[in-house]
Length: 120
Image 1 (cartoon, rainbow, N blue to C red):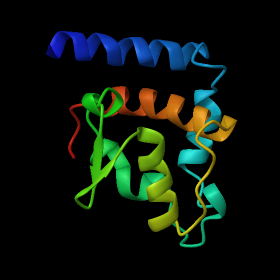
Image 2: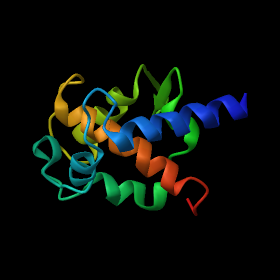
Image 3: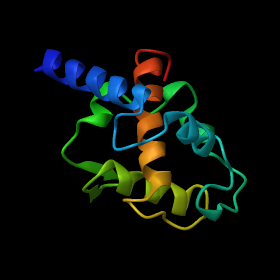
């Protein structure tokens, strides 16, 4: 099972890195991940503030069927992203099918793969 998860994560990274993933642009996603203005954020924080060096991420983050935030079930990684935008960044959720979300998720695949196994 671990091998399958690793292969899926690697394939996701390949798709994201090559831009095949629904036209997503991981480089644009990196800029969003590092922007305090994501979703109109007002806290001055960025995604990187809480997730430096991949903190709270693992390769399984990309392949989970469900997520949990503060003991609340969340159905997708896009919903997790929006929760963070609304709570940590104090911004407004972005559309789950938007280019911004696609780019951000593409970058997350690369970011998680590159930071897997580092100090959390």
